[in-house]
Length: 206
Image 1 (cartoon, helix red, strand yellow):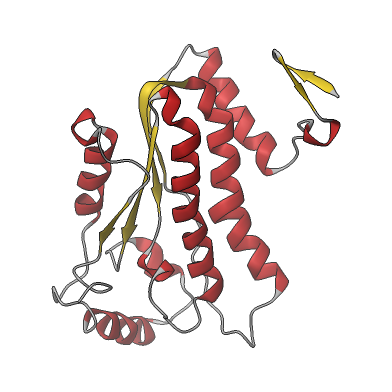
Image 2 (cartoon, rainbow, N blue to C red):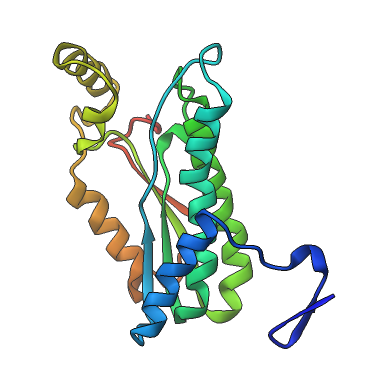
């Protein structure tokens, strides 16, 4: 057994920080050194890369899950001691966790993991008054689509195909996602706990 704070922890739970966890701790240490406490955290970093079942390899799996799930978990672990009573955590999910879009199996699974994480961490952190929720955007106008490795014609065709699937008839705007995140971060949403708000113009709902 090893002592951790005022608790005894089995040796297999002794914290060993390398890579992702160590980087997460560096941020938390810098904030703590500056005397910063947190009322809200929006975890938005992630990777969106797609491949079919036949083409996907272990490297792609590791890249997506390390960024979208492992990175999120250990960053929250590192920041948790700095969260004020009643703080809010918002995770960035995706409607790909809910729809069967070809070639997005790994990405969709990573976002489904985040939705589950919001529920379990809410249950764990709620005694401190800390809420964890998820925003799950559909297609939003961001630079992400320019990073998918498509040329301009392919990108235009892909955008039109996606737009045709959105009942609202358009892509979302970043400010529309930001407004929902701000609502979840505020005391106005104090009764919203462990849930997901979908922002997709009806794409996954209608």
